[in-house]
Image (tube, rainbow over all chains, first blue to last red):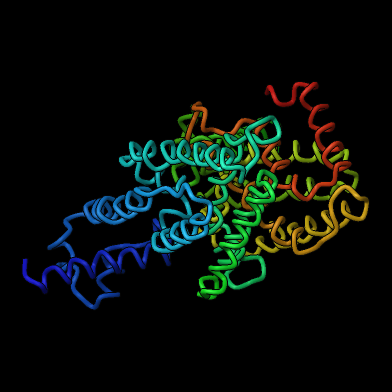
Amino acid sequence: MNKKHISTKENILQTTIDLLNKKGLQNVTFRNVADALHISLGNITYYFHKWDNLMDVIFTDYCVKDVKELYLYFPTNIHEIAQYISRIYDLQIKYTFLFSNFYLFFNVFSRYNHFKEEFFIDRMDKMRLGFIHLAEQNYMYLPSKDHDYDLLTKDMWVFVANWYGFSRMFNDSPNRITKEQFFMSIYNISVFHLTEEGKIAILESFDKLRKEGVFDK
Amino acid sequence: MNKKHISTKENILQTTIDLLNKKGLQNVTFRNVADALHISLGNITYYFHKWDNLMDVIFTDYCVKDVKELYLYFPTNIHEIAQYISRIYDLQIKYTFLFSNFYLFFNVFSRYNHFKEEFFIDRMDKMRLGFIHLAEQNYMYLPSKDHDYDLLTKDMWVFVANWYGFSRMFNDSPNRITKEQFFMSIYNISVFHLTEEGKIAILESFDKLRKEGVFDK
């Protein structure tokens, strides 16, 4: 393929992602994509015969690829956690159509159901181990009846997987959740389980991001 | 209307709610409802000309009515909170199609958007005041930088509005959230802000429900 071919194909993919993010998973058609790009329908179907073909490339070559890359490295140092949360945030915004509503996504695209294992179960297990690891380093309390890291993992996932969809219902009102509040929510959900040392380390790394202007974007 | 008329109409409504809960908001047709009830399509359209008419009755006469009833009385006594959470749980299960995915619901039925004020904003404000009230009674810490009850309200709503949709992705696996874990999650998300007295009061009222077998259902 020459350069023009590649860029048309990539433009179609990127524009579709943008429209899905803006209008929702089930409200985008080939026609919308063609209109947004000022190209003909035939120009799109030359690259993607059916909508499903287009979605398969978006899901497999974009979403799954980026998520895999994120999870290649799981932070074991508490000072790296804020930076890691920041990467999760960026990925969620990049693929809002997927991350703001997993339940809907896997309902509409049941052919991707086998990805659930990799998307959730493996990573929830990784998070459980992460909490134990932080406890061994005295940043979190050791597991006990009060400190149930299985439950904390579930609660954290419910929050991380749904906050943006919830927030989007409120647009620019005070009820939306800002980027800084996204970070502080993760802190608040886990703070009861953090030791004084853990609290200081997390808040310091949030402060660092704040000073870098990460929350202003 | 005679009794047979009323009961057919109510059967259609109840069966539609059951199917919506089971199959999802966008996967139910008149045909499905007719098949489930072993009646003809015409029998349904006699009562409801269009799908939208049926949904309007379900939303207005069932969901909105029940939610209004729930919020008529907002607990101000900490010992009543567990019982109240239990009523929220029951309502969420009764109308899973709505409560497991508000974002989707208001996307699909944009004509109900004016209910957002009543469904969320008013009640989030009520919860914020509820936390302040509990703080005044020494069950929670007074508002401060550490105890941000605006953020706690948002986090609680993200959890309550999304836990069941998330949990449903995992069916009967250990990653689903049980009824008892639903209660314990609400406790865990707020525990950092509870005084010792508050913790004892909440845990005691959960224990009472546990002994009554509420969590076994």
